[in-house]
Length: 218
Image 1: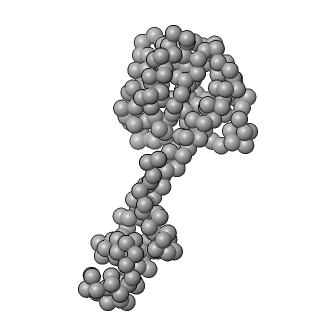
Image 2: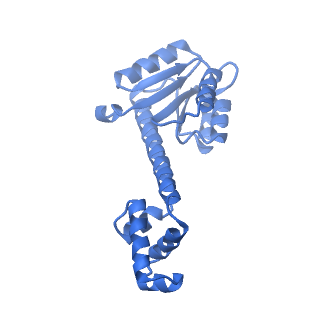
Image 3: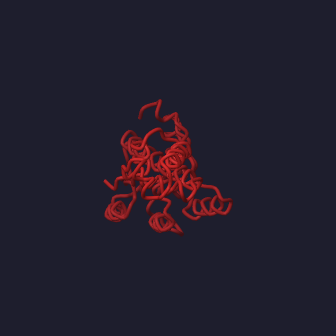
């Protein structure tokens, strides 16, 4: 793991009923300058998430979850399924920690959206590499979510007429044709266009079109 990268604010959640495993993982992460929080059960971690939701708090920094598959009470798989239903596994990617007998279950969970799994006993370096990749994925998701919200706020500031002008500008239509289509003067189009650029924080029609382009699904 790149030491500079691991200095970025991030949290690794550890959920395992084995105290020795929790301690060893926390020490490993501390040695790589990564913050961690440990929970002895899926119920305890679920309670933390519920409390955070009740307080209106959202995940704001990169995070991932190291999750044991088999635990007394709620299993790791059951916790994962609940998080997936709530749409939390993109902000908090899940890496399952499995025994040999649990590998098929872990593989199936990856197909259902888990980030990865590591079989016990695991290589410290290999696990840290996967943690770093999960934190990077989490950070990218949070950045994209923030960008979408910022875009939504900017769009909310536009008047209906500004929205009409913006759509035609994005379609590549020149001011004269926009004026004809909306039955307004070219000067009025220019004023609306300038306000759209200002509110959307762009300097050109190309930049505006790129801003409004839906994210690639690739």
